[in-house]
Image 1 (spheres, rainbow, N blue to C red):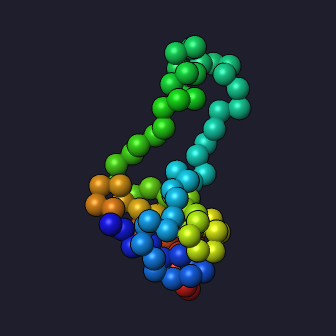
Image 2: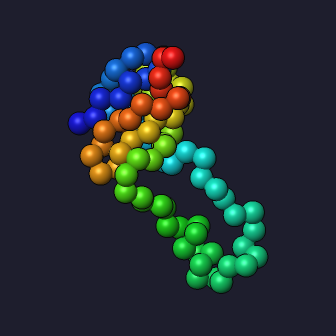
Image 3: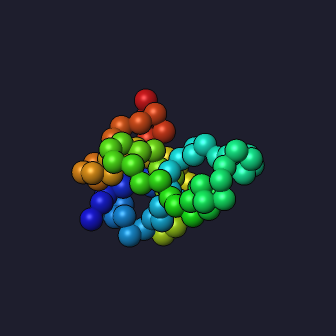
Amino acid sequence: MLEITCPFCGPRSETEYINGGPSKVNRAESPDGFTDSEWVDYLILAPNPLGPVKEEWCHIMGCSLWFTITRDTVTHEILPSPETSNE
Ligand SMILES: [Zn+2]
């Protein structure tokens, strides 16, 4: 089980959070230039990269605020990032 540090409340179990998915995903503005199959894949398939990924998390069992962490999707290690550092 992950321990995620909320920048407002401190370290808490992952059961107190929901994962909002990758942060700042580039989105297409229109289906122009896509085949129908490519557009359906774009709308339905979520990216699932290996390695460090910036993700949005919400502390729903605490302060209910959203924040960004960088998590390695292979090891689940939460890496330092500007959004979670105290500097
Ligand atoms: Zn919190």
